[in-house]
Image (cartoon, rainbow, N blue to C red; front, side, top):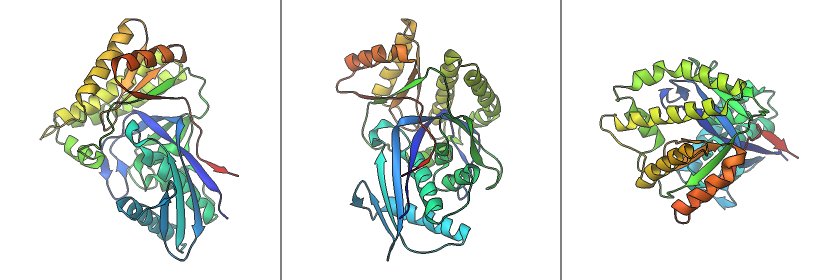
Length: 319
């Protein structure tokens, strides 16, 4: 019986927002992320009479299952293996948290596939495998901080570990403000954003922003890391506002949350926001301030759900 693979989701501090090649999932920019301990996916693969996919104990037969089956066929063709498989996955990433569950899902699926077929692959190759399922999954192969280098081909686009065991005092608070599905998918949002007159500037800044974030991590400089992450997220969302036609993932509560982060920072509770393709925000803070920040958000928003996360590990096979 194949082992269960576990992969944790990640949050990009320097964002991936644009594909160079949709089929190969090659990005137009490099990205840098923090793997999170609180959110993960477990996946197991077994031989079967027919292809099947279950998620959280329920058989799935929709577009998400088709995406999994397409990925499996892609990997089988790549590595010269075959057979029907029963794929069982348990996802511990709340869908409303605004975190990319596909990052942990496809990292775990790639590792389970490699284990099931006894493939002799290193983590670089595993990252390339995961990328073919979901771009952000390439980074979830590694713990701590990881960089997905954009590359210019299937072979050169993969993630690597920047620091898998960081000693930095860094916490992430995932704030669930809205649990409704977003109207503009990430894929569509990325394509629309390319029409912004500032898109090329976004690309031109990428190398320097990656270098600056790496320097902040090496120096364990929380202030620099938080400022850079907040700036990068704001740059990404400025592209949605200035696209033709313009759009936004922000809801009124998103703006309120941004203002609260700024107000708390002015009062001495140092924290920074980052936001992906959705209305929910993530707050970067230090452990000494996390409880006070949570309390302030609980007072400002009715029934808000906040989950605290620290550094998570890379993909593993469970006994």
